[in-house]
Image (cartoon, rainbow, N blue to C red; front, side, top):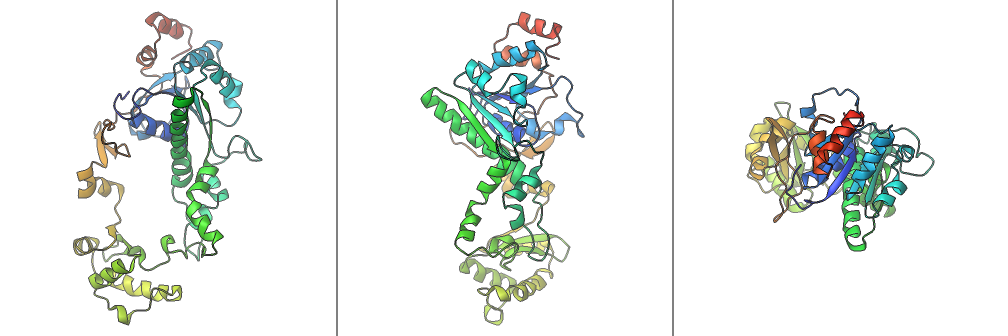
Length: 380
């Protein structure tokens, strides 16, 4: 739908699916790719109206009966005009439909075929069911998040579905498209959430190899250090401190009115609980707004903990346009930003198949051909 952005002119077919696949498609569409979502004729009911599925933005939809010979033929014809394809089914499903990599690459040798799964295309668990929480558990990511004296904390489904899944698939597709532009040949991208979640942990696996990984809840950036954590304010709101460097730590103590000489040394983790309590006691004396006014003027690493409504209204985010309003609803803007080929303001997603005629016409089908597909029940 968008013709503005660094990926303008790129055509992508998206087989409708759940979280990570649509997120990857959104990232490409945000950057200007022409993404066509292929839905089922009778998609499953959703708990919210279509206008609230923000990850469906910036693309059109066709609802196709892929159980029919004509439906498969239509998809293969569209594949012939595409640069990339995204699918998120279990291994073997696309092959059984007659739309696997071999069939699609035979039709279009330049196609970059992106596959999004939890466990990958092969391996003992390839056919096993799973969700984000299972993939990040097997990658070693979940065990590293949470308090030392409690169970691991589930970080929403950011690490598996969106970070280790959709973003890695989008990155893989972008790499594949670059390579195909040079070689003239497509290939298959096997993006597994367990692989992506493990890749996100690379920095910490280095600490493990070097004998410096302290365990869950004991690392500085894991919330154990008193100078790098979340604190409750007098009005039961929260703020974050990230004074990791000595300079910022000294500035923080001055802003809090604490004497470094009278405090336990932060260099010894054994002192961290006592030091955290000293800092926490001071933070509890003011409201979040009062601390915001005070600490925002100090040269320290600080930010209030904002809920989603507050984040959209914060002056910094407002100045940068970090959030945009689409059809009256606030949502995150496309990211990252490009100086010469900026992304356009997103357009709201559409219901399955609602603009099939315009979508197919945009991919080169004549009006008579579209009429025939409707008459045959191939598209809704």
